[in-house]
Image (cartoon, rainbow, N blue to C red; front, side, top):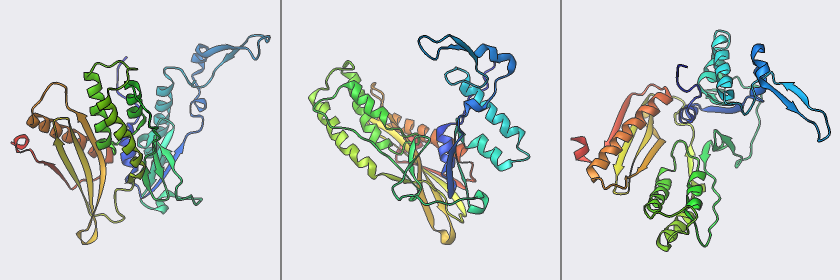
Length: 324
């Protein structure tokens, strides 16, 4: 079988494009799998037996639709949706574009530059603190901000398993919390170096650092990221990227600089990425170069994701050796 590549849209790209729209909406396809029929010649392959009770007779059922739990179900659902978008492109061009590029499985996140394009039929008000999950990220529509919620209890002792569980709990596909998570990853690397088992209690020095980290994690709820990255009448867009490294880690961050009237500019963070330095000792200049490579890859990805006309790209590093 020829592997063509992923049919599902990347979460990073979908959320990045979601930030282009002044007016945004989220929705999902109700019972997506059950609305897609299987070819009649293949339906017999989805026969099941079922009993309504312990003493009831066994009944045979033939499932006629895409069934949750089948290994091919996600592909069939997405492929069907994409084919529908292509078939109806001439009749519904706007809807086709949304289905092809602003859909992740059964979730759709999209928008428009104005209400007329959005074709709004109903309006409703929401509480200022109301938030909705947008591909896993909490979004507050009233303030139009991405927010982060984390609930971590402080315990007398921790194990390596619990440390990894806390790190994995922070879902952040655009790495807005990169500086915070990097510190946690550095601590986790030190645990691996000490060859601790999953349920071993952390040594006191590392445990004290981890408790301090968990305490500061409560401040994450104060982090609020602007969703809409453009302005009503923008003139040009510039990507500003920065790369840096230390002995413990290296990273990169990309901002969007949106210029409008009077040469004023709105600057918004787009994404970041950080990596823990390898255990094998590497020189700082080499890590600085790794940070520059990471930044170049990040800019390339964000540029293809946004699909905007970028006027200029400016990348920064304080390493003269990496620039040489």
